[in-house]
Image (cartoon, rainbow over all chains, first blue to last red; front, side):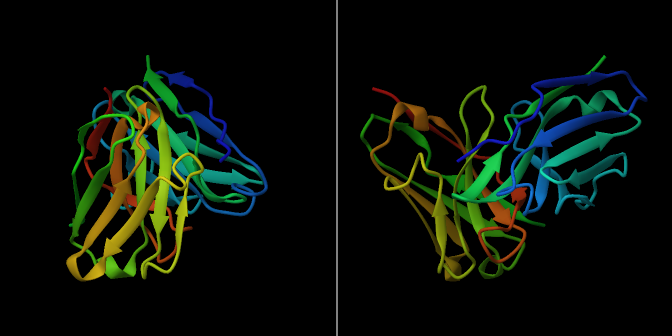
Amino acid sequence: QSVLTQPPSASGTPGQRVTISCSGSNSNIGTNYVYWYQQFPGTAPKLLIYKDNQRHSGVPDRFSGSKSGTSASLAISGLRSEDEADYYCAAWDDSPRGWVFGRGTKLSVL
Amino acid sequence: QVQLVESGGGVVQPGGSLRLSCAASGFTFSDHAMHWVRQAPGKGLDWVAVISYDESKTYYADSVTGRFTISRHNSKDTLFLQMNSLRGDDTAMYYCTKGDGWTGTAGFDFWGQGTMVTVSS
C-alpha cells in the first residue's frame, strides 16, 4: 500500500496557527475521506478529525480539517503547549483496497 | 463509554504464531467494522486489517496477507487477529480500533490501549 506524505516536523509558538499537510493520490484522498489522529508518547492515538473536516466529540474547535483534490490539511489555531504531539493522517485507498497512513508529523510548541 | 481491551500479545520466535483478542464494550459491536492497526517501536502507524460488521468482507495490508487472519465473534463482542509465520518486522504494539461505520472504508474512531507483540529468537 502507498503511504500518504506528511512533513516529519512542524513547530509554532503559543497562540500561533500551524498547519500540517497530507498529500495523497486520486485513489485515496482524491476519492475518500481523510481522518486525523493525535498521539502522545506512550499512549494510543485519538481521533481528532473525521470525514475530512468533522471534529470528533470533545475536540476543541481550535482544530480544523480541510481537503482539496488529493491533499488535506490539519490546522491548529491558538497553539498551546499541550498540543505538542505526533499527528497522523489516514485515508482508505481504492487500489489496492486498504487503509494508508501518513508517516506522522511531530509538532513542537516552542 | 466505548472500551476496547486487547490481550494475547507476548514474545514469540520467528515463524511462530499468536492470537490477539479484543474485548469490546460500550457500543453495539455488531453494527461496526473493526480494524487492527500496529506501531513498531519508534515508528508510525501501520494499518493491518479490517473486517466488516457482518464478517462478509475482510481486507489486509500486503505485508500480512496470507499470514494473518482477522475474525470476529459478534455474540461475544470480541475481535481476533490470528498471526502466523511471524517475522521480526511484525514486532509492534497492536491496537484494536472501532470503525465509524459498517464497512472497511469506515475510519477508526476509538482505539484500545494496545498489546505488544515481540518476535525474537
